[in-house]
Amino acid sequence: MKLSRSFITPLITIIFLAVALSGLLMFFHIFDGYTEVVHEILGVFFVVFSVLHVILNWKALKIHFKKRVFILSTIVVAVISILLVIQQQKSPKFDTILIERITNAPIEDVLKVLQVDSIVVVKRLEANGISFIEGASMEEIWINNKVNPKKLFDLIME
Image 1 (cartoon, rainbow, N blue to C red):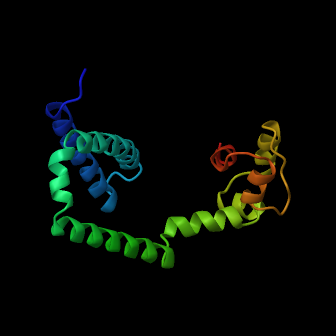
Image 2 (image 1 turned 90 degrees about the horizontal axis):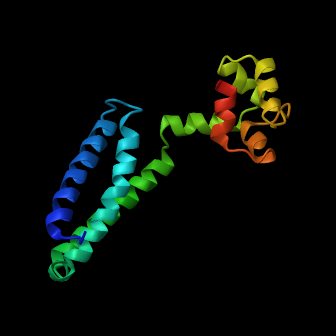
Image 3 (image 1 turned 90 degrees about the vertical axis):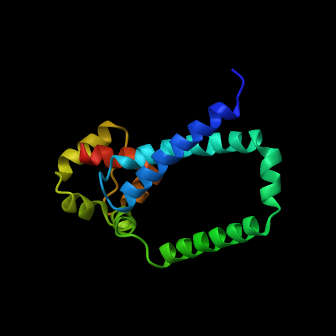
């Protein structure tokens, strides 16, 4: 099947609407935990089909790229993006701080906070080839055992 504007343009429009809607749902914390995967996966498709859209419409788009409004729009979006990144670095979200503190705290403290039985967790980790290092942080444990952080957390919470 040959790619055509009549296929790509409606598809990118529908994907844009889905990504925009899921972004709004995430922004207002509606259906938290469910919209992220839709937003991320469709975001990838949006990028792919946007590239195809640009390729198919390159001649027409070149005219727009040369206009002053395009350059100004690019600068405005870049500045806003940079400011948002800087703001996020200076004042990270609560969950980012929480995850960082959990990963850097001694594992015994983490197990207490998560209200899991340390004896059961130690046996489960050892059964999966992960050595439990007393007093070490979760991060030190996953680095020393060359294990994925998510796998370690999943084993703790099992």
